[in-house]
Length: 308
Image (cartoon, rainbow, N blue to C red; front, side, top):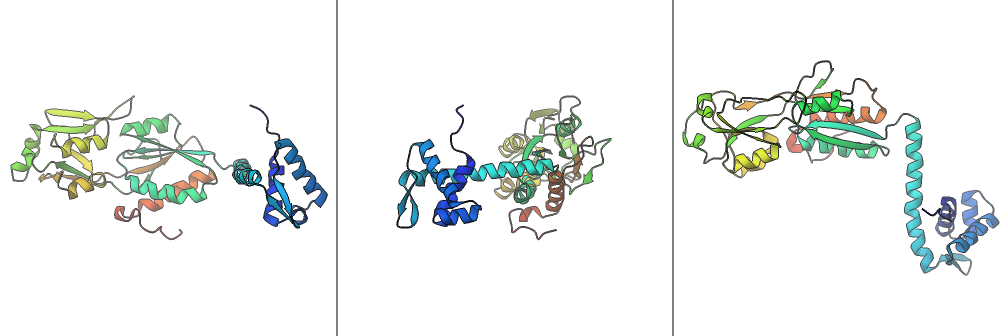
């Protein structure tokens, strides 16, 4: 790649001349001599091979080419300044990236609020978000490739902060044979029906979760696929209420009238990588996740909560 002939300092000088309305004014703002500013701009024009400014009376005015190049240079100078700021923050211990792994059953709406609030405080820190199912979250955390984890399990050897539970409902299509019984159901009624379950994304010790007593069982790779299958009449399943609100409202899914176990409310937990101290950006994200976990799901996109 060919090295640039024009430096960032030269672009900053040209911007100052245009923004301040002349060489003398720019020299005052830049704390440089007027001759130095004039030489810098003249040298730029030689290096680029195009005129950037013309003198109109006592004022320096951009040429057409200068106008185009100056607009592009503003973004370039801004990005360079942001890069320098990021290096400064990293020198002070600010992370370049936070790696977050989340159980797919955790409400996305709460994460959206947390990450939206994190953006203006991030100072360029990126977030790498990864979704896993069941024990897949634990594996990623134990492998050390996550800084934070949200899991529906209480993980041995980790001190987690308990979060709000997630409500799961046993559901089927309204025309499903279980609903046509028109009575309270027991587990014996479920045994002869097809149950749709979610495949554990963990590889080492995958776990089955929940009631698995049906003689027929289809295993799918995601909660969204399970919801699609069940809302089209293919079996029954326990699914997170927040994920199927629309299907319930539109009449594509209906809670099964089980005598017990029709609703489950497993708690979720927030964990941190125990082998790595939390940096300042990670600590901010932890506080935001905990804060917005308390917000009602129905208010997920309402006005932001007041500052903590």
